[in-house]
Length: 59
Image 1 (tube, rainbow, N blue to C red):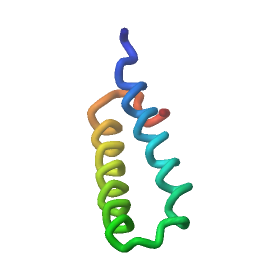
Image 2: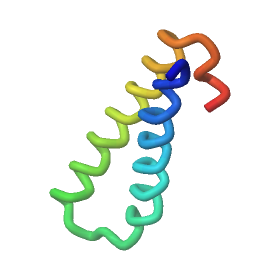
Image 3: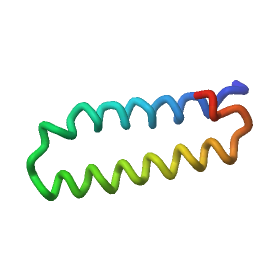
Image 4: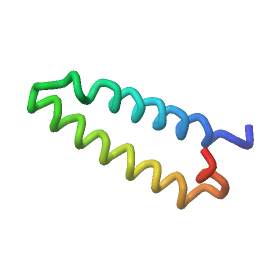
């Protein structure tokens, strides 16, 4: 299973896309704050994956 990092990266991408779809239907400030924090976390995880795993930037 050489490509074990493809799966988490794909999950992050999927979660990020779902958040983007739901972003504009969300009017609760608490949920918006959670969304923002989660988006930052996803971005930092993506960056981490890209830096740590060779070839992951193509995912």
